Length: 134
Image 1 (tube, one colour):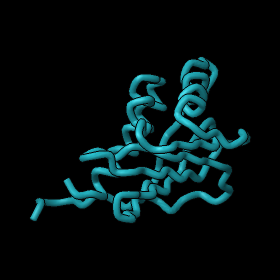
Image 2 (image 1 turned 60 degrees about the vertical axis):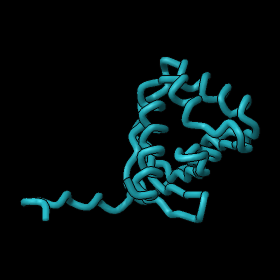
Image 3 (image 1 turned 135 degrees about the vertical axis):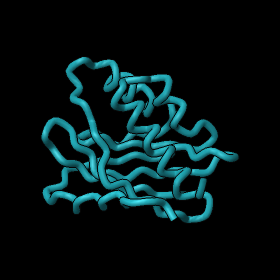
């Protein structure tokens, strides 16, 4: 698996934990040895693993929290750091999101998440290649 693929896999794990409301999976995505931060739309900035995870416990445990879908994820590598830019669809709203990952051994762990309103739809996702693989 390429490093880009590994980062995108970690990003997918984040959104899967979000979509399935799995707090343990969400906690596993976040770094333990690095400082972490999170800015939910309309919230103040949160710093430190306890505060960030407590925010996710509240969001994931709230039955009124709407489902989320990640679209158009693109990863940029910066050595042992990676940035994923993507869009979140939540209850008919579109958010632009930035997820920052740090390499932790062979895994990529989330160190920062921020999402905010976006008023322009992302470009359509590229069509999958068709025909036989070469």
